[in-house]
Image (cartoon, rainbow, N blue to C red; front, top):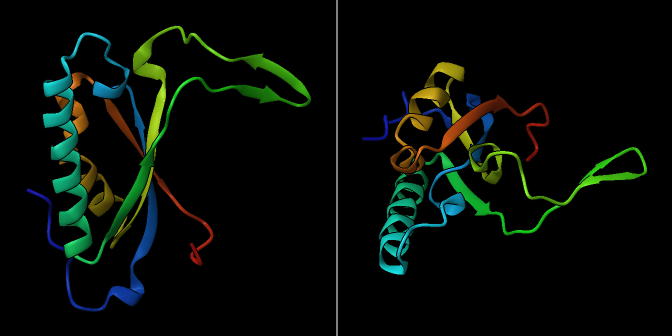
Length: 126
């Protein structure tokens, strides 16, 4: 269950980016019905975040991608391990880093070995 935000004053909340790595999106052995069921869990999770006033709209990333350092193209995949592949991100509102981590712990990505990095957003105009 996603923790309810504390208090009614959402103006004092900070923004955090959830960065998703691995999970079902990077898994190649899921059937279309398994993947669809998992995607539906993501929609329910995201809808619940929005219902709570936390935001929760993000985007999954598609393949292939590219990494650029300076002016040089470093890699366009394949990646060493699919668990390291960034598969999407989301901006949420939370009362603190601990609160944002508690929200991240409810993410469906863990069913397929995914991980979530939680980072504070410096520009609060996002």
